[in-house]
Length: 348
Image 1: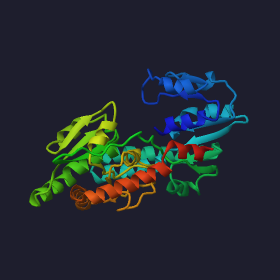
Image 2: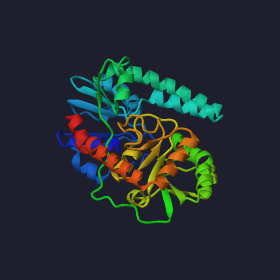
Image 3: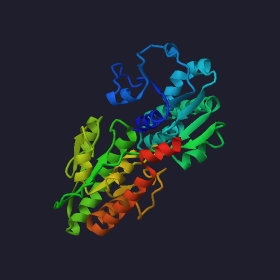
Image 4: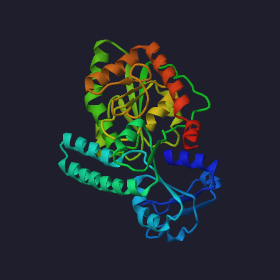
């Protein structure tokens, strides 16, 4: 989403050639017609194909993500000439991987912790090269800018993540069951862990307290691709695995609140901004809201322990005024600071 929005904003003021590098083993990658229509040239590199085929002269080369920089490193050094080099980091990968390694370690998976820590060390070396090679680095938050300030001799600019605001927002339909929503790629370990954390540690507390206090019953819909067999085994009772869906809008519109129980990661969570854009209240962790200028009990509820997270969910279930207040403040925040218009202004 970030890459597509930045590309759209750049195309409004510049002639842009798009080069797609299928890094995730997708040799049949396709570029949507909308993006083909706004770019001057589009090229998809096939496995083993060199960037030498891209011989245009550019004023600026905008590279999205560190993984692409690694593929382009030799070409950039040879080609550079008078072109300005810009690197767009939607997170600091060395930090993100260290956090994921710590999470694996806490969960007792030492093999994956060691592997992810090695990846963090590789990312750190790649960052050191990039911070010498590039003229400008974009990051998505002030926190990331501060963290890189002493490591990076390039100019650092903040380019916040953005979402497209829906044309109209529908209030949740009346229901006797309170509906929570979790959205995320379930092939990404922090999202897997978030669902597991909610299913095994948070949901049982909500269930017990709701039953004891005769409160509203609840369900949690988990939407996203890449679920594993282990995750499917955990999902039962009030937690339902919807899998991948073609359109998230109906799921946001039918939910009463969004949960983001993330305990590792980096950058900023677009799923929180999406929930804000649909005027849905959010419960998340300190890590989940990192990088977003949102305040606890004003724009959303922040809780880190299972007990506190469950209490925040129960509070939303029982307090309609709080839900409406959080949703209104969050909607106002995203419409002012996290739209494609704000992104255009930052790029300009």
